Image (cartoon, rainbow, N blue to C red; front, side, top):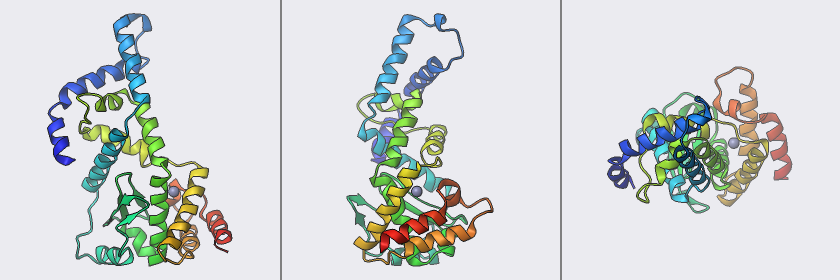
Length: 259
Ligand SMILES: [Zn+2]
């Protein structure tokens, strides 16, 4: 996959130029009558292409987003206490629900975690400092839930539909070019840091409870992780609180589900 991107990267200047042209056409900057019919048809074609974003394109972009996150955040070295503990608490969890998992820790003092459509799972050391093994497992299950329930995929499609430059990136030569860092930044902002709907969060909470049971973990780790988040509430800077619904409500609901 990576080699493939390197090969395709050679095509990127041309595609970037095409992408920029598309973006300019969709920006309501100039009066419409200044566009030629050919330009307008080109813009319409790009919108049509965006509506049929290929699965290959989406998986490739998730892979690039994972690489970019790993570039921006320090991965815990194998011998770090965080890496050792995370490997132990996820021992045997190499695949789940059809995903090949790559679970690693970031040495970042934030209460956060994420999963990507390519099976990448990252847990921040700040979350590991606060949570027990079962609580960490529940957060991982919840994040995998977002992936398997395709919540991120919907966002990805929406982001691609809104950005003509990205939507044309996968249309040349039947491949997917490697995105520029600036483009990845926008995609991460749209896909990673935006909030899911309340319904999506509830579905992922249920998914997490099933994940705990299926792997022989203690389901109580889920409501107890929510209790921890609730106790941290109020102050800013807690990523999982900023992107997720009220943890006390979620804890209450999860306790009912477990009975
Ligand atoms: Zn969530």
